[in-house]
Length: 283
Image 1 (spheres, rainbow, N blue to C red):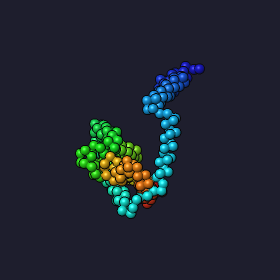
Image 2: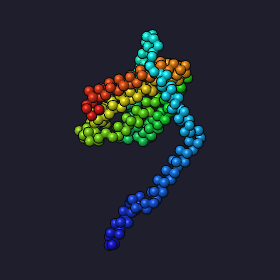
Image 3: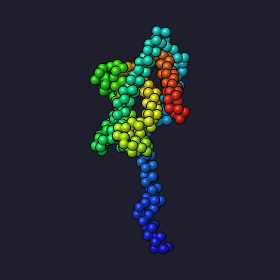
Image 4: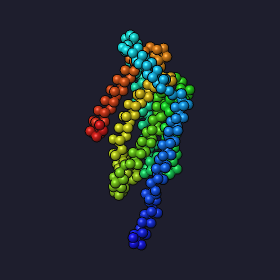
């Protein structure tokens, strides 16, 4: 082996040490992670009192409960109307919470994106704020706002707004950072301002992505709005929690089917809307 070849190999070793380390080193680290995961799993099984007998017995009870839920029955036409109104209230909570969060996150996303932020400090605080909002579960936000504004749909809207603001802020900022720089450079090279570069260079690339994210969030928030109603934030969830507590299983199954049917229709409608606005790639 020539001296030049040896020198080149030494340079590669110094530049990419991870590719020249012994195989057993990487395997040892992987083995430690697997061992740690097994230990955590074993600890969880022991501390959470999980057992085969409880699982089998629970499945039997679940099957018995499912049989008592058939056939789904709203009880009366009057109660069916109450369920339909509560479902519309849930849709309104999901729609308002989603639109408010998307509207607020749109300008804030530019502050958190690397290529459009004012400076590094603003970017840091914007991203950490999104992390904080996103790190608190929506049920916790619902309980907080219930104590602030009282029971009802308004607390549900604010809970969705806070939770989605952190999610949209992260997604929007990442979409802005992933935008192609060439259109921006083209606008700037013709004498356009930074604002014009964002308007004509970045926004046309962003809008299909942002619209798709907002439509998916609305679909997801319909389910979330059904859940937060259980803690008193309005909507169909409040009715569902009462039926679970009183074991009105046939009416409960009717409400569950109502929620599933509504979510399916929203999914179909959002897909059609993406197709009509963005094009076949949205599907």
